[in-house]
Image (cartoon, rainbow, N blue to C red; front, side, top):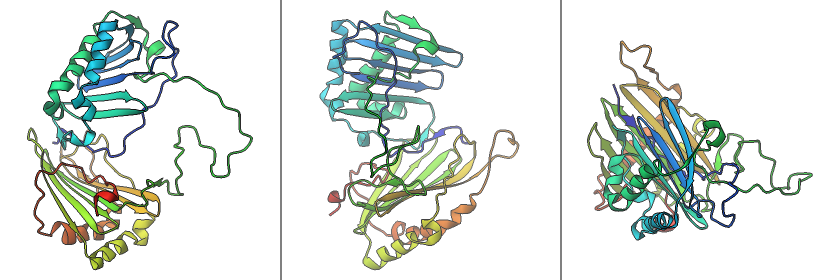
Length: 373
């Protein structure tokens, strides 16, 4: 049975939200809302911490049967040390794309870093210990600092009094009530995104005027190993193909290929993407929390005139004798993308293009069109 955690790569960075908690009376109102937020999730414990620009810190730690919330203040040398660590030129230059992302995680040890680099926030995610290893020289001090902060002198708060997931505070501001929404916008429902969507809930594309045509990802999971194939195709016909594999307790291996579709092939691809059944579909089916021995997961993203259509399909098979813990099922809607899957296999994957040398794994995240002349 697949005991290791399969990683669904995340391609859209979330926006750091703000909690609205009372600000201590002794805080400096001119200080930045935070300078760094750290979080570490392991199988037995989760810890997060946030530090304000004036040295105030907030820590939350959680185990299976206990939750602690504490707050305190760093002295000037301590604050200077953490600021120096955050200003390290190597961590400043580090981007998420440089961090290896495994397909399988055997031992859970996630580490998240958010650093305020006004006016933007640098967000870095390390999915396991192996992904941090190449950067130990400048990331390990932050890991150790998070551990030490839990033992710093502090004031303990009640869980319900102080719990806020270590999110930065936000000053409440009120604006005059509108008597009617502006002509170009409708009022948002609570909890809904203000981004415009069409009737199927598709999210608008970026302002790059549909820099890409489609992104496809297919994963086959079997006996503790994952084989991942992703393809991104641009409007010009240029494409990138990546093939990754990872077995239990093995390192990730991958190869990348780039080429250009000729005009007839590109027209065939566009025709498949414009099939009425596929074009109108809003199907989403990923087996979150399921335990299975073998499965096939497919995600498809299509750029459609300023909007992004996102679809997902899954078929997975359980282990006999584990009826109470194992789910199994075939996705009947997968037939919608079967012709596209066959076409991509025959017209893109079957090409004998040489693998790129010294390439970086991108998970086929669409890049700016300017980088693909």
